[in-house]
Length: 540
Ligand code: NAD
Image 1 (cartoon, rainbow, N blue to C red):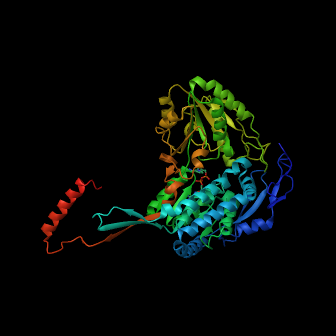
Image 2 (cartoon, helix red, strand yellow):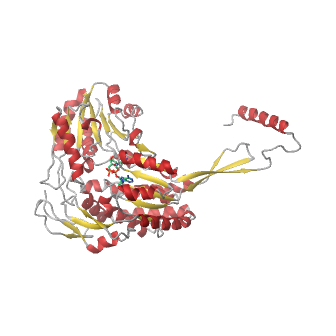
Image 3 (spheres, rainbow, N blue to C red):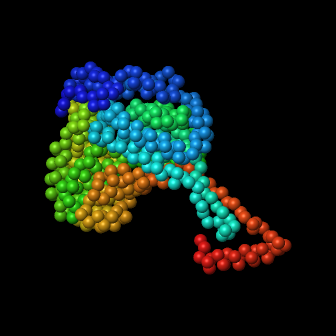
């Protein structure tokens, strides 16, 4: 591993003091002015701050000002004022803003990547997914919002005489509560659709990754988003998150199933809508006719991208008996060949986890499995010699239902591999458990894989790809079935969730009461006869 200190962006980085404890890890620091400009975007008057450290080396990165309930109040007041004007702005102008953001994010890519890697520890190649996802999302809603949000005509009750127009009216101010694992895209992507629909946003990113989210807010402004439409507050989820839910017109939450259930109840109490993008225990099925090398490559990315801290990453791998041994040999070889590192450069295949909590969960899951008889085919232990929170890419075999790792999300670089004998059995085992976020199927017969996909209870299924094909196809809705969530991001679903559907019915000539001297009884007869005629004419 390199101990040099390349600063790929030439941007906001300065070389920090070397960390004596983790000498293999280069030490980075951020220019104080750069940090101050970012953190000034948080509406925070408590006078308190929370230190953020880099998982690359444990070195301090920034002090994050903390918000109070009064700050959340102020954030909503500002957002509401700004939203009234924004809702009256032509959708074409909102689209133009998103297309400018697209270009800006691509232009400022290296700076974005530096910040993501510094804050989250992930390998640069996995950080790259984030600006890419934002650019794709900005382009999609930058090109499709007018069409999706445009007023629609629906059938009126009396053909030609009742006209119905359907408007998609913005909800108002949307609260966005986001996690740390994809700190740039998770903080921004859902909000782009909310803005395109004419809403304002109050965002509470995860405390561990505020800087990436703040850079996102800065780029929105640089792309021309009017002042005050995007507010950022900071603080503990249970406090500041709850303050947001108490004031918002809609909540978009991404995080754990446990927190999602609390948020769902709080939203129900206020009768506001929410979308909940939650956890998973995602399966990959490798069918007997799969291209083994391609499947092994895909499995390596599906399991170890962002060190497994990815909602759609694979934690259960089901492989057909006929190719099991060959597949395991190739998957283990690829896993053992991975470059592990905690630097800003492009060379690493996997970086450290984000926190000691994450390492503790991975360690507990592996130790429990091994104690109950599972075998470790690769990895299996923490590597504090590489960085404070490193855990090796780990493959387990012989996992059984008594083991914690069998059905519980590790959210780390740990996968259990199982043999199956028939495709019915594979589908049944893939559907076992409570989650239903993402699945992957490898087969040379894509048609057959797609037929099998329709039987898998997951919101997205990728054929001959790990997860990127569905996630990066922004026209495709993305979200979970069962305990993996409610609602969908992306596609028309991803923007319409931020609107109220309003039906405007205009009545011409005839009114809905007796006319021309008809009695109520005669009117009822005419209406009854009309209904029979309309059915005969095939009207809905
Ligand atoms: P988490 O639920 O602990 O935290 C997520 C966010 O919610 C953070 O901003 C946190 O501060 C906030 N929060 C915590 N408690 C809250 C409360 N009571 N009220 C309001 N807000 C609260 O999740 P995490 O452990 O940080 O993130 C990892 C989890 O997120 C994993 O389970 C992962 O699968 C899931 N995830 C899902 C998706 C998806 O799209 N389905 C994407 C990324 C992560």
